[in-house]
Image (cartoon, rainbow, N blue to C red; front, side, top):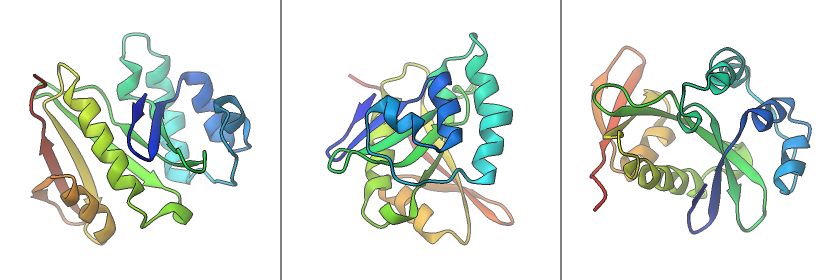
Length: 171
């Protein structure tokens, strides 16, 4: 679990991931948080079904690098978004992050704070040296929050920018 000034960020276990996909309040009930209507996007649903859940079930993987991390507001006790790493560190020590925040909680600095908290967490993981993120070129809000978290643009593709933040080793 990661705690920031306004957020609690919890990694979901396999059973909780399955409840997350139902979006029926069962996850919120288990986590003892307030339920608000939410939908799981088709892209996230496919990632959960075909990548995240199968990797979570593989006992050879460190689940913290495959699961969704639920972002919970301390003030309202609501699930307000989620993020995930897309696998364990590669041979260079890089991990990739993906993230999303529910529309009603956007533009309040929550995702910037969540990413900052996860950068701190990742910096304490022995094999992690950097975090990578990809954004659509048209998604100005997404890459603005990466810039606020000290990510630097390292590559440009037809529709995407690739970003990276290097982590310093903990003392």
